[in-house]
Length: 156
Length: 152
Image 1 (tube, rainbow over the protein chains, first blue to last red):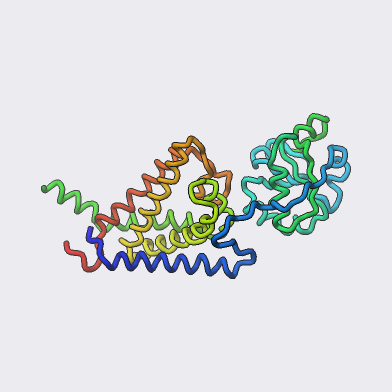
Image 2: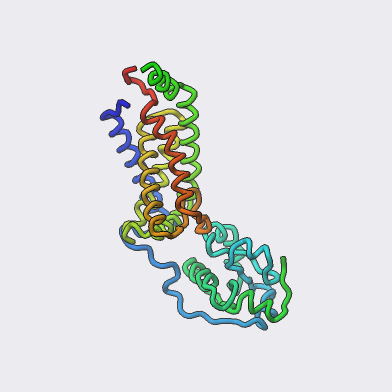
């Protein structure tokens, strides 16, 4: 196969270029990652945040400035969500956030929810938003189960 | 002997080598882009593999995607092809080992292969098989590719 010294040098050169680009771009990034430290858990500094119930969501959910955020997978959102809610799956946070960032930042109140009282995606989403500096958050813990259990309309 | 020679000739044919270069290079260029765009997400995926200690997660998350991109571009434009194919083959072996560890543990982690979406979770054995398939063109280039200065 004729692997020779030159291949070793070329491989080292590629590695060095990657190191320089990766670390260099990170250095100039808006929020650089810590190089030799563990990543902080996103939003680990978030205090316990307030909760809202179905009545609040019903009345204020679609008020101007309030955004309901569905933290479940996109398929679950398509199968039925609280009217007016936007889909922002926790599992796809980076892409979803990039797409919705202007609307999220313009909103006065963000209300994440997920499937039921035991699901963790809504609080996970709240922590991710908190880490992005979006701190006007209230959780609708009851989620989809509570919402449809009370006979409120579901949007598809 | 004649059979071996003819196989070697086929594997080092210009067409097959070009197809391997474009295929492997293209796959890795595509795979690198989303990871370059979202280093933090990729770092969390690497952390989730639970192989590296948490303090050593960021560096590979920043550097690996660029290595994939640079080696991929080298293959596509036909420069430093053997070195680039060797890098990508080594990376694939690392990926296979990392997936293998988690397959043996019986957990499906999000792959981080082509996207940094945590929704991109598949059975680890399937991903290992896919990586083995992608390894084939890499090895064909490393072992049968011809570069200037090679003896025939």
